[in-house]
Image 1 (tube, rainbow, N blue to C red):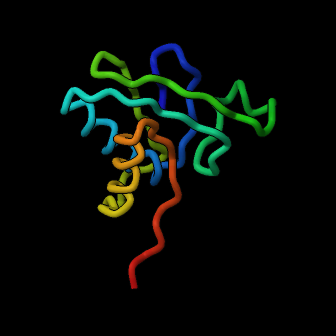
Image 2 (image 1 turned 60 degrees about the horizontal axis):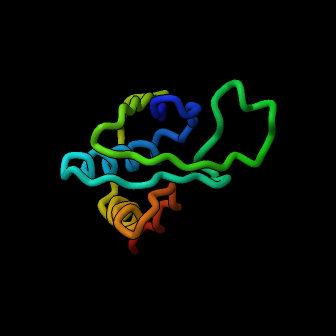
Length: 107
């Protein structure tokens, strides 16, 4: 994900697709949110930051006037999980959206 002047974040496709759905949904409702990352396993830095090693932390404010670009390594082949979207949406509504682990499948 690339956010205006912030460094590009390498987010795994599956997690990024869910984050994109939550972010776009909020922006369509004219809602802003903070997106933060703190060494989550689904997030890596852009190519220029890889040599720096672990310790990637940061946050950006996303509002309806933000310019975002989502880029994927492969086409979407699996449907989005409603329960994961709900967990991410609740996090955004609580103040800070971040990549959260995909919930365990229901039996």
